[in-house]
Image 1 (cartoon, rainbow, N blue to C red):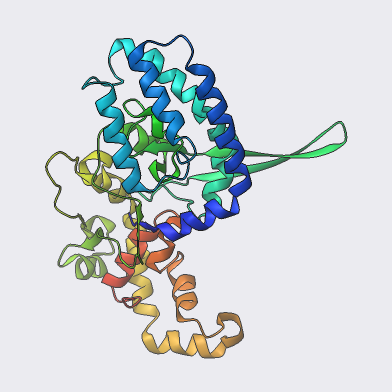
Image 2: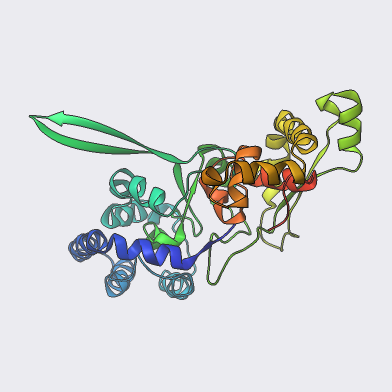
Length: 322
């Protein structure tokens, strides 16, 4: 629900530089071996992949789009969905090592860049579990991804970018299945400083006063506001059923409303002063403790429901805008 500055991915690429170099060498070796005995069209496609293989994993978004169009022209208007190309596509995925990276690389990569919640719905965890085993007296750590990896350019049509880091969107299983290969108007990676999400949860007028009088959470009415969907893209709300998901979280809204009546600005200031050593003069930390979730836009990917709780907490004046 909010983009990530590309500099964060660039930093991660440097951190995993040696590992990415090894992956690239493996890709080049397998693609060159795959060239033999192929028809002219397939051979031309693979030769192009070999040519750009040193960039495939770390390729920026703009270059990916350029090469995507080049590769589309090579296969002359057909797509990887056609029957003759399905087996060819699967072979490319194998050459690029997509399944292996799901097991051995992504479970360590995404925690490093700070993504722990589905980038589409922000309601489910996308985490990595870590398990230590002793095999013949040697300690080994296994990492297992508790999430799926969605592709902005779907691997069913563009297998060349199945391992390109800027093409990968960690998501919960439900959102990945709902989206399938259809395009959604959301870019996870953007250049520059990202300060605000274009999506917003709001309370319908009168909801707060109705709930305070009745103490009935059914009097709470929510609204999810998203940018106008461009032609050719799916609506975020309809695709991922955002309204339906968050309509089940009215009890959280009720708690935030009650907290807003208890934690007045004066009370919050007194808490920060009385526990100054604990809060380290950080107002955001005070807000985080009271709300029960992260309260800064830059931290939305770190915990489920963060976006929802930030927006509602602002609506009821429990916290201030950044």
